[in-house]
Structures are given as structure tokens and as C-alpha cells.
Image 1 (cartoon, rainbow, N blue to C red):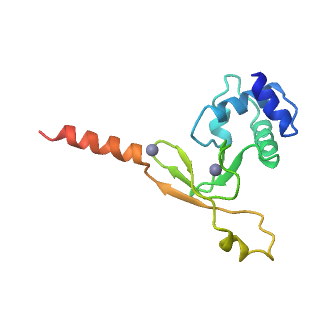
Image 2: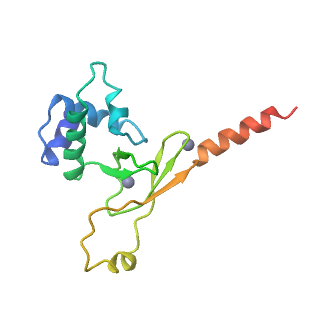
Length: 143
Ligand SMILES: [Zn+2]
Ligand SMILES: [Zn+2]
């Protein structure tokens, strides 16, 4: 927990109990979370607005990433290995989110004179693990 508190402080955030709890959930998973999904992890239903605010703080301080899923729901993910703007691949089956390579400099340069405020860069489908599990099952079913 002490490392988490340091991580928060390094991002200019005070280590409150709820921030630590939410960060721990995000760090312990390769999945992304929507506000309701995160809220359901708490035994005593934390106020959704409070959770939303914590995630917003994390995001604006560069601690986590946010993307909008194809169903229009905002999702948050802890992806420390990714820095520059990059697309994501989200598995519809298991919910795992993969960070894809960042966009080439030449591509980003075409927007040099613009103020980019949002980027919805999402691939959606079935991940390799899930595909393999499905085909293993299909093989086992053969009489
Ligand atoms: Zn999957
Ligand atoms: Zn990412």
C-alpha cells in the first residue's frame, strides 16, 4: 500500500483511502473498468459521483488512461507501459485490454495545427486467448 501511496504522490495526488483502493483494483487487472463496474467492487456502495471524480483525477494527472468503448461507455485502465497516444484492443469476451503501438509521428504531425481534445482509438473483438480456448473446446467436442 505504501508504494501505491508514493505513486499517487508522484502524480501530485494525495493518498486518500478511496484513491488507494481504486488504484489497487485498476493495477491488479489487465481489464478496463467503467464507473458502475468499479462501484460494484465495493461492499458498501461508494457514491458513483465520488468514484467518477477519483477516476477523473487519476486521468487528468496522467496516472491512468480513458477510452470510450463501442457501446459509448467510458472505461479506465492502468497502462504504465504505454506513454504516447495509442489505440487499444478490447476483448468483448474476457474484457482484457491490450495497448497497441503508438501512432507514427508522421500521422500525428498532420494534426499539428489542431487542438486534439479526444481520441477514440479502439479495436474490439475476441483476443487470442479466448479464440484459443474456444477452438480447444470445439476440438474436444468432436466425437
Ligand atoms: Zn479475451
Ligand atoms: Zn493504453
